[in-house]
Image (cartoon, rainbow, N blue to C red; front, side, top):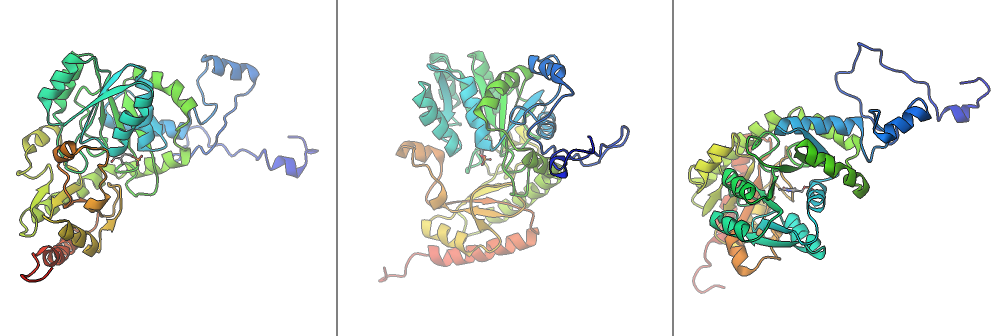
Length: 403
Ligand SMILES: *Cc1c(COP(=O)(O)O)cnc(C)c1O
């Protein structure tokens, strides 16, 4: 630019320092830019007509978020992906994009709470109806699909927090026989599992295993090119885009995804075995345990069983004491990061369920969910044992004559 331009103007047009051709950074840069320009108006108009590749406005697309989309699609074994500002944004956009007034959606008592809310309350306001069954009720699923034209079957496997395993092959077969699309929230199983099943749309919370460090939120919708292409136009006007800096953090997290998922799953397996053999524990729910009612199905569908271990301590008092006495486990929501977490029964909300639906969900007032992190196994086991000892005192029946 000309020498006569003032410094206060030039700071807005800094000199470029391009990386020469044939030379590249090993870690891709963050394209922390909302806007992209072309050389001239003609090229800009060509882009806007769809006749020239490129980027223009980050709400629609950005090279860093695009890189994350391509990686997620590859990991899940699909053609394309759309990344979103949170896992729930991925779910809400999928539901809004794929339904219209008069459609019917099949969901489950075991479905993630916010997803249940979105389907029943939000879609309900727009004239979409739904049926809620148990994920274990294959006969019921067949009956509903053959009697009611259904647009979407929305489900999870393993389920939260009881780690029930959905029979993905049977559910996709029934759905496809009756012209319904399947949406699998694959957050618990992760980006590397279930890709071999004919699921139409995977949704994920990238907040969990993908980032792995609990410091960034994100979500992904992963599907065939035609489904994602149809969703993308509307998505840019709904505006739930993932910021490029967040996308970059998730890309960084994914470098250690397999190592973390497998190491944490191995710890979870050992924790589940210890708990299953402990006198103070009434029941343990973990798909990797031979005693899990769907262990054979889990083995068929999964290579790694995940990091959520749920247990029943027999009484609400024992469950509260146990959660409170744990030192290495933080009492908070979420899962899949490197630190261990505990969710006591009072924090599991199923307020929208009837008494019968609550019974089917399997959650009781003494259910505790653990999410296993990357701490040393011995430290985790010791912490769990001392908290179980404390719970034993709390859970013991009061001596005769005392309240
Ligand atoms: C956490 C979670 C979500 C929501 O993800 P956010 O990133 O918190 O919005 C959706 N589904 C499942 C199964 C989850 O565990």
